[in-house]
Length: 203
Ligand code: SAM
Image (tube, rainbow, N blue to C red; front, side):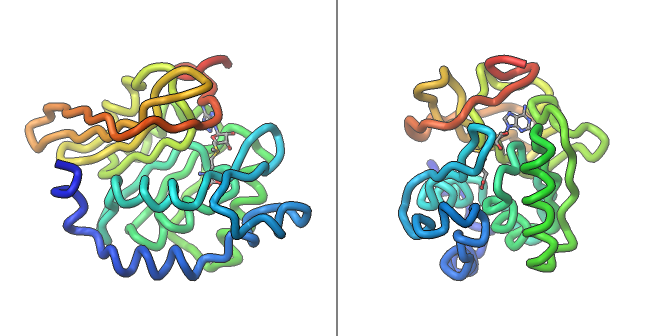
């Protein structure tokens, strides 16, 4: 079933951009020497930049297309944001930690992206002013599937989200049919930092 999805995405472009993106640009000086490792790395405030192979896999699952409007929850370092912005029309990205957002925004502007919109706040409630979204990527672990995100997903859209307790979560691929029916597929077990806020593990 998963093989069926993502036919509209240019996989070669995704892989070429992913390979060209210098991960060391997205981490602090003391972490730059580890940037080539396929591991999550600290970015401050108890948060991490995700393992690169998982970023690539989650982007493949999400399968943004050139005309997609994408909502991303958990901007973090901005690494995943850059990939989404390269592969889609517009990215609306929400991060709850002001300082992380400031740094991510500076990096993404230095890379000349002009199709990214930034918000500091509780992304577990989405960003309803710009809804609906064709794709929603959540890069922190939700306690439950957030109703608000389901409501903000367009018919025919897809969402990738880790759901479950802090130590281990199920990575879910949610698809909404043209008629608005939901399909939830469990992809694999993953480990993300906690989503905070209304649908997260704590405020
Ligand atoms: N995708 C990011 C990257 O490429 O660097 C890594 C994201 S990190 C694993 C998860 C991020 O989600 C953290 O920066 C954290 O502050 C943020 N976060 C947690 N709960 C949030 C919420 N309710 N709203 C917005 N961001 C949240």
